[in-house]
Image (cartoon, rainbow, N blue to C red; front, side, top):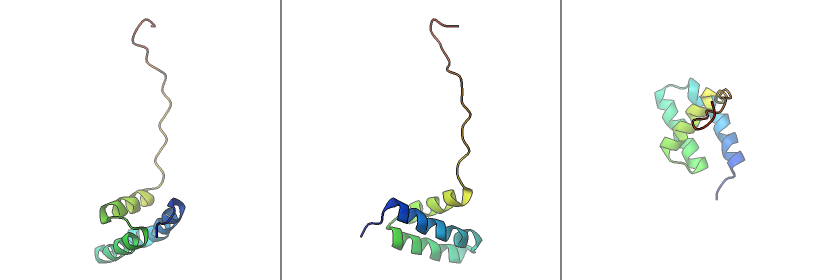
Length: 72
């Protein structure tokens, strides 16, 4: 049974706080739980937990276009 993306994100969000506060041995258990529920590999699950703990990425500032030919 495959879960929808929104459900997988909710599961990940519920485990983030437990993962961040846990010592190394318990982090392994949390990773195992996330892999079993979401059907992910451990590498992907760890990356998803780290990214969720870091929060949303900062927006990039808008840049003016750089014209290289003909316009100055």
